[in-house]
Length: 268
Ligand code: GLY
Image (cartoon, rainbow, N blue to C red):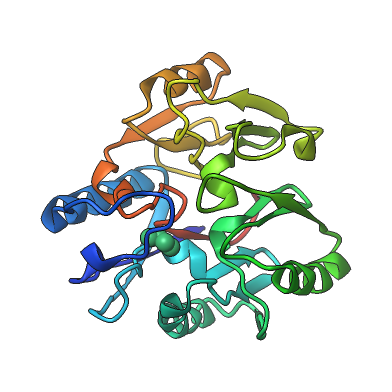
């Protein structure tokens, strides 16, 4: 079973945090329609959606990925680097608790956004970004290494999160913008570079699970329609792409990984 935990768009979405992008007008109804379509793409790929309510005081809540890291062994409840975003955390922790997974909360002074955590097999890459500090990375290392994960800090610049610059697009393949993260940190996996005309194109959501459109069982990436050149590069590597329109969500500095937390039970 593959669940996708998502979160409703807040009525004050337009007051979101912004770090690298200028504030521009956001059409909230268009953002909501894009978010609905994103959830439908997840359903087509075999996910069961569990959508949590949102509230005016949590403008960024739709970017649920930043509030937790979900692994087979349990969930780490994050401590987001932007202080106003910490109000998003309790509702997500409560929703994750309903899955019965063990939970561990990061403690101050650690800060960590889930968008800075990229898991590739037993390797966990954590972005040393404006949102995630050394203490956050150290606490993750202490938590995860006893389970056989190898935690590695990766410097990130010119973008919000590690996963703005690099994401998994298959079991052993990653999509990367080498201008924002050092490629040599990712020795081992096959690297697919974003098209030079599309620097924001490295954020893809790989959904590997049973059912739906995923007939071969090796996964599909949910991917922004705004980046067709990089999308064609992925397809040239044999990666199946399910395009979604998410440009209204992108104005709030959110990508396709940010809008869900995948919780998997059973064989991958
Ligand atoms: N607006 C997304 C973030 O800053 O966390």
